Length: 117
Length: 111
Image 1 (cartoon, rainbow over the protein chains, first blue to last red):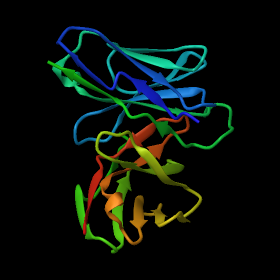
Image 2 (image 1 turned 60 degrees about the horizontal axis):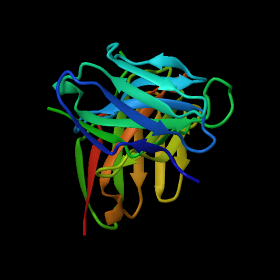
Image 3 (image 1 turned 135 degrees about the horizontal axis):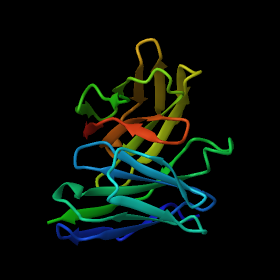
């Protein structure tokens, strides 16, 4: 049973560029969340997708956008990259919290390390 | 605003000793808490969880204690091993599934 997978593992971009990160959820999971983890900090919630819609959003600017596909995989897009966007981007999946079924456990992928120069 | 924080940024213990990692949270309405372990270069790994209607939950070598009166959470690791060396985060869960993480405690196990 494959867990959460993310690609690429590492990425280097220049200020002002755009980036797309990808996530495949754990088998059987339908809800995907994205988190940003700066060095030495805990992960910060960016947004959550369920049924191809953004359901919750954290305190991140509109430069951060996402998408969920019918197979539940997801993308995170960041436009106009800033040096401060350098971080580990984590994807987490779970069964929907909106149906009242399943546990609360969220499973994380290994992350994508983004460096903006 | 909501926040989950940890008392100590680093903890060093001798192999075989018990470890206790603490966490304070601020949202008294939170109903679910999770401890994650994160090794270098990896994503957070689920360790144990607890719901707010409980005050203690035990797993294999780990125990989580919840004190809602003072909004405090702790993780106890019995017979700490070198493989336990990692950063440990507590996280608070809201109804929609958003996790609010603290800054983390780095556990170092000395052989």
